[in-house]
Amino acid sequence: MSRAIAVIGAGPSGFYAVDGLMRALPDVRIDIIDRLPCPYGLVRYGVAPDHQGTKGVQRQFERLLARPGVRFLGNIEVGRDVTIAELAALYDALIIATGCSRDRRLGIPGEELKGVVGSGAFVGWYNGHPDFAELDPLRPDMRHVAVIGAGNVAIDVARVLAKTADEMAKSDIAPQAASAIAQLDIAEIAIVARRGPADANFTGNELAELGRLAAFRPAVDGDVVAEAAPPDSDPAPERMRKNRNLEILRTFVTADGTHRTRILRFAFWHTPMALHGEEGHVQALELADTRHPDRHWRIPTDLVVTCIGYDPAPPPGLPLEGGRIAHDEGRVRGMPGAYVVGWAKRGPTGVIPTNRVDAMALVKTVVADLAEAPASGKPGPAGLDNMLAGRGLKPLHTAAWQCIETAENAAGQAQGRPRVKLATWEALIDGSQRSGA
Ligand code: NAP
View: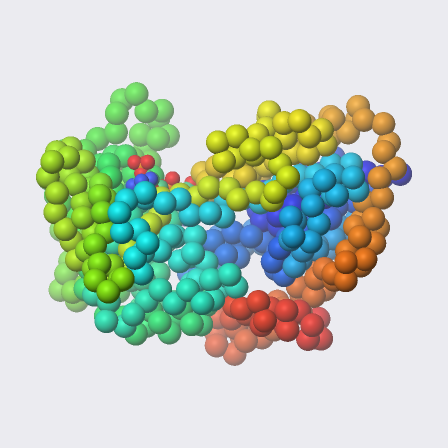
């Protein structure tokens, strides 16, 4: 009897694991389980809506969904609808690929004020993630925005807020986010970094794009950039990346402001200390100079988006260590047959293809362990179908997802966009049941 494996989480690391498993075990049966009705995880809900090229990897994942033996079971939440222990009894192996879905917090006073939003929620909102359909983070009278963090997510957030409706015309930004952003009249977006320009995690292409915006001019303190250099101890590729960032930032010192009166400012060496508000809404961000911590000042801000990383929120029933799933080289500790991969394993670092490398290494471990394990006779997909049916639960399979996709693509075609996302739970469930696929 062929092996049966459940992959929990239909994002990039889950799909890369499926790819590796299909290559190594051609007759394997794989169920990919996700709480959302849609597959592709961060490709759909994390990658910026104006970076369609990055989403091209989706086609590779689509081909995997079409393979015999691979099923998608959407709208099934592990922990709510079925437990880890139940899945472990049904499958020869479980691969946890649930990523990092919880926004880290700054841990400073005032973080609970309205207008202070984590990047997971904010990015989810503009990308049409149904959990954030009600977020409503913008007010048309907002003039000042602070984006905290010096990574590519901070760049994404600043750019999506800065781009004009024309610049976003070919994107798949969620319709309600597109219209809320189009009403804004922002004077300044500050990207606030607690360390210097040579310490930023930006990558060159993403940073350079900020120099080509139609309405916003990038600005940075010339002295701060002039004195910066990567340490000699950095490996050569890191030094190259950092030097490229510094070159780009130097062009921002003198960036042309004739036609671009709005400012996208890089504020390096600034540590957030507190958020101040009135009537429950944020009004100012208090900062300290990282190098002279006794120097504090406040900048006005109507919206703060914290882009400071994420933590995993794995399904219950797994051993944890410091908030993460406890594992040894991907093997979940104390749970033979259970594995973890991707951001759920490593934390929120690396680009999408980084997860391919990680998943391929894990697949080797899984395949080696299975080779040593006697045939289990576990029921796999048929067993899960029985269990879910007994609970009155109907997973949304690939065909249901394709109905959603067909509806989104058709709406997109009418507007010259790649797709117009169905962005609420109701719309997704309704779309999954409309025939057309
Ligand atoms: P990131 O690159 O780790 O950046 C997080 C930033 O938050 C760092 O600058 C960090 O500063 C700062 N930070 C953390 N805690 C802070 C605090 N308490 N106060 C102030 N600042 C704080 O993470 P990310 O931007 O979320 O990106 C996650 C991963 O996805 C990265 O690997 C990124 O490259 C990738 N990504 C790629 C793309 C793309 O390729 N286009 C787009 C989006 C994301 P310190 O360095 O001082 O800790």
